[in-house]
Image 1 (cartoon, rainbow, N blue to C red):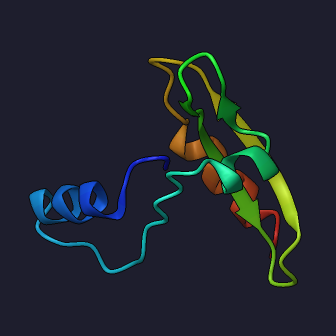
Image 2 (image 1 turned 30 degrees about the vertical axis):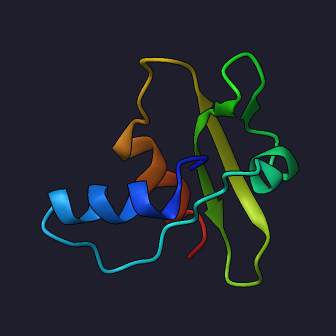
Length: 82
């Protein structure tokens, strides 16, 4: 996310805590490298990346404003890795 780490901390606390780290990409370096920078909003698209054990990206899906991922589709992509 292009939100700050402080924003992520507050969001995580509002959920009762989370057990994984979140990236605060306020300078948009990572989102640009991964092709999910949304220049019109100076933010990032929501996206799902499925990465294999070797660190290779095997699936990418980007979502526009108001769009959400289909959990069953993502699970299907993860199952293809095994």
